[in-house]
Image (cartoon, rainbow, N blue to C red; front, side):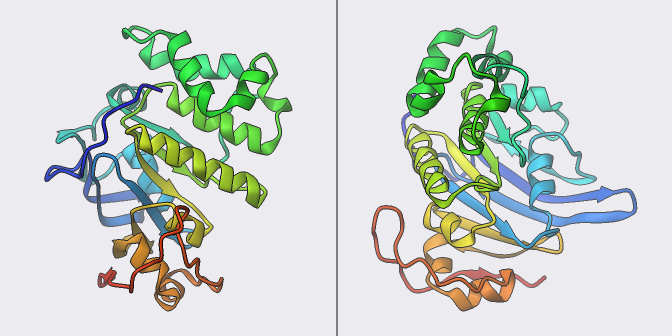
Length: 272
């Protein structure tokens, strides 16, 4: 992927979701959901099953249209764009379940991910080589059908295909689903590298402590509303707070991936 200079979060967020309401028929799935990502941040979106996490991601990606509210990228509205246009603007998503083209090769899946960039100055070979530097195993498997890869390799291919569009924002829905812990740790390390190259990352993850240990900030959804937001370090340091909103009974992670000790919790709860 193309390196970008890292920047501190600016006054205008890179990605902003502003008071969106989403309905599925008569059922309201999201109620006034707002969140913001600064350029170069890693942000987790957490919540129990049915809280509205995937709906939020699909709304950002243009797959679901909000009845109210707006999604902006770099201060410009992307709410009315098609999913392909959202990708062209710089937002790519790895959906839950990967949704690879299982009958196509690794290389062909990567070419599909590059489709929205086919008319840019960036060549397919250049971007493929940059992405494969993050996933050396995919270079070895380039001619292999996606359906014959292991679960971990398929997830790597899913991330790699999303990165082929050279996104400003990478959205990841359930990175760890069905994978062994050591593979999950490897994938989180790759996301850290992607972020260090300048890509902002928004991640939904069922393993709450793993997500918090590998992000800067977090939002918690409950029944379609944001009920809690704060730094990931603060949330991670307060397991009781996590349990009250997410039902987490695991022991808290005491250090992040870089080994730094967590600070006392100062997360802000919102009234649901």
